[in-house]
Length: 514
Image (cartoon, rainbow, N blue to C red; front, side, top):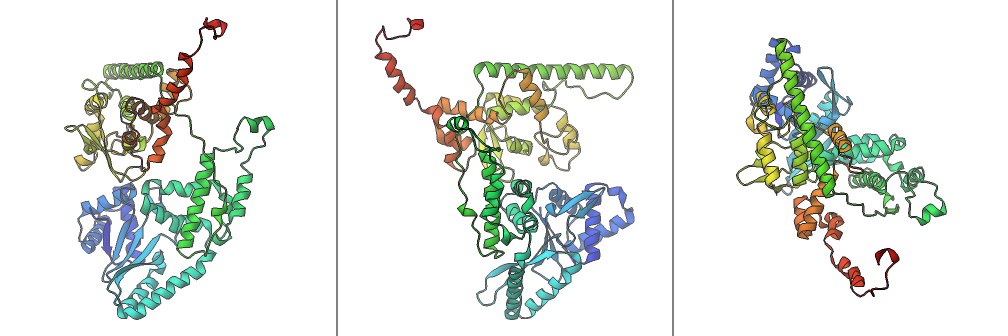
């Protein structure tokens, strides 16, 4: 499906586009039917797309299924505006820009007559009231390609000359966010928040004012005062985890590196900062007894939920009140049990599972498809399903929530694997509350929900000893990431120390072992 809309971009037309987009997303009845149809007809006629296609484009954009919407300027080929969802917010039943002077980015694509290459130049930020200036620049470019290239080059150089006055906050929500959206839309917003959360005092500084000394001053505020005993015991000198500090420093460093590449600054010295030494984290996986207790807690919760539902149906039926649907066909009361089982038996990241659809499950070949667009590392993969995972998916497909999901969406192929229980047309976003209660009932200490992925990897490593196989199943980009599990397959060390037992004299034992 195209994510482009062609129209004559003017302040009025743009205002109408936002108005009808808000109506499509939140409340179609808030605009008079005649006005709504008039705007829709105007947009669809100019873009040569159907009303259904326009609705799909707007919905996909707001749900982050596409990185941006492209508005192509009619009668001026090559000139377009990219609208990013991150630049807008929901205000009541409307869509409002976060910054009226920067609602997107303007690009121009043209062919260089000197070498016949297609070039794409960013003209600047998009604002409806200043867009006419961009149109005039492009008209000059089209009138004389050589002159236009010089004009465009001068404008780009002018931007670079003045861009040193841009603050870190402006750069973060502008070029940096756009770059990260292009790389991976799923993690772009998180990258920006890492910087804003950790370096809030630097946000109003110009980008060229940020240096290694300021970051070192920030690091000083995160240090702990340790006694000599604590130092000898190897306790961390940091208030935060080293991994958290590393993420913060690396992210702001990548931000300044991008500023350097774009000519915003000439150079930076953040590469002189010390590197954080990362201790290998303890890999936590379930013991046999813990696994039994976990499944016991899961089964008990599921049975209780089914009994409660049956009781509620009987209670409301007796009083002639609307009752929830019976679950005669499905053994699962809700999404919690199948989600935990599938996560534990496949090792697929929770975020990937939540954004998966039924079309990602191949029941015939017994494979689960991980799409590049929803994977954390933007890697496609196929994960085989064992008997438990396969049976769980077959049973979960019988649940009535999938009928509700299908009735609230346009196409069957868009059906979510785990629809939200409150809004079946949307995907599930979390099961943290249910997990906390389950882990407490099972009396399992120091075990996070994400540790189920470590449990999956650890047990396969112990049974196969194949680190490359585990890396592929976990969908890791680099084998280095998987090496944290390598110690689980190294039996040579155990055999080495056991040789001391075989050569020990009978009398050379402590009293309690004699």
